[in-house]
Each structure stands twice: as structure tokens, then as C-alpha cells.
Image 1: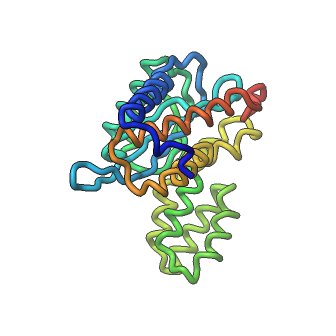
Image 2: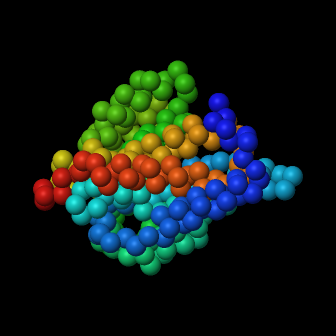
Length: 259
């Protein structure tokens, strides 16, 4: 259904877009007035038309858990890639708006994110998202063996010794790439355990951002490619505004009373 939108003039469409752009800009530049202990960082990719070409753009998203235990979407930007410079720029803008108190940053293992986190949040720990880690380990495993090894990895991820034993087992089975992935990130998988045990399940992954990514993919599927970076940010911003409203008016994501 078009809901009458096909009857809108070009000038009316432009006016509505300007109104939405202003709302999104206001949302993404609002002051951060509450301390954020846990930061969750992720990116997803979309096609954007640039002249006669279609280029890939990264939608960088940052969410956090506030001192009162509520979730909040803190910022987002469109970038050419996930290079450290783009993440550092986004982190710097968040700090300029008042972001402070970050102790743990959860993300995938993109080198750009790791580098930007290290320089932007000295003293904070970095936690490798267990979902992304599992995908990285299983990515080099033949399909026939993935189900059994996936279960072993799931069982082992609660314990550092078990995970290291699995790395040895995989190496002995000839899966050196998977084993090396485990060894490489052995010190970045359990930083969440420094915090209250009731928080652990939600600190192990970037699932907090997953709903935003899924909704963006669903809403952008009929579009195929966006006509501009601004149109991509407009849709993403509107989705994030709605989700954020639910978050800050809903139940606490974590109980921050337990130490």
C-alpha cells in the first residue's frame, strides 16, 4: 500500500525529509547526561548509490548501559569502512557530548575497532563478542564438522581452561586456523567476568544492537540501495529513535545495584 504517499509533491517530500533529518540530527547530537559503564559497538553494511556507482557504506552504531541499568542508543554514523579513524571520530563525538565512565567495550574483533577503543578509552577493557568469536572459529571448519565443534565451543566458552583444551584438540585434528583464532583472543573472552555475575549473559555479546541491525535490514530490503548516505542515516535514525524510546521508558536491562 502507498498510504497516499504517491500523491505527495516533490516539494512536500523534501519538506518531510528535512523534518526527519532535523529530528535525527537532534537525536544523534543530544547530550549524554548519565555515566555509561558498558559500551556495545557494532557495524552493518548497506549499498548506497553514488552517481552511476553503487558503493558499500558501514553504519556504525554505539549503544550503552547507563548507571541506572537502562539501555540507550548513544550514537551512529555512516562511514566508508570500519577503519580506526572512523570509529575514533565517532567515539570522540560521544565524549564531546558527555560520555564518561566506560569500563568495558564489547564488539567484534575488527582491528579498527580495537585500535580506536584502546586510544579512546584508556583503562577500559575490551570484550570480544562471543557470537562473533564463534563465527570466526567455525568459519574455517568444514561444514560437516561444524555442528559438533560448535557444540564443543559453546560448552567450552564458559571456562578458559576448557577453551584452551579445545584449541589443542582442534590443532591435533588439523584445524590450525580455528585453533590459532582461539589462542589469539584467549585474553579477550572473559573480561566480562570482572563484573556482577547477573550481568554476564548480557555482557558476552553485542546482541543489544542486534534488533537495530535486523530492523534496518528488514526495512531496507525493499529499497535495495539507498540514494545517498543521508537517506541511509535518515532511516537508521528514525528506527533508533523509536527503539531508544522503548529502552529508556521500559524495564532496566541490568540491575546495577549488585557489585
